[in-house]
Length: 244
Image (cartoon, rainbow, N blue to C red; front, side, top):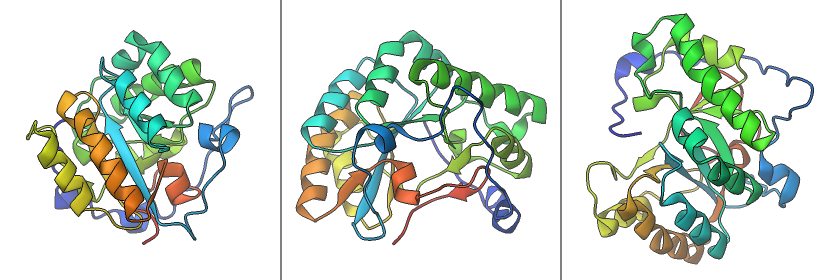
């Protein structure tokens, strides 16, 4: 997702966003993440849960990342960009089958707050359709590029049944292509309910994952999808972390 500034102008809508209500799924699709259907769902009210999230993929390195996550007994959430998902459909399907969650990260990665409502809808709905086609599951989550959101973005997300997922731990892996630095930032940010931002487009990030997994497990954390972490995320609402 590249650089992710979150300005104060994007953060003053919590009260309005709290009024958002869920949308219903269309016939023939489900909004339940793969973890619900194929793997035992973790109760994050009891467990110390953390969500690793990966943006901008899938990439050529995502296959290795999926192998590392499986070896580490971890689930994650992938916020995919439409063209990337369509160019590597097998990786999206594989991630879903492995119990990971697939979220919407738009078609062209624009700053949505600078677009019209119609363009925002196009950005979200195109990737949403792609995810649904590749996985058979309608996505429940979306991450606005650069963390930029406002009332209009929230309204379109709510209309499409998508909760807005930001983060509270930024590894800044897009800037520092050094696996030791990335791992150290992720580990220093570990806390119950953390949503950790990374990108599976950088080999240095993928190289940092084994150390992150080992340390998190050693400290008693369970690595889950964002929907597991949050329970029942509400479409349109902004989330930066889960239960602490």
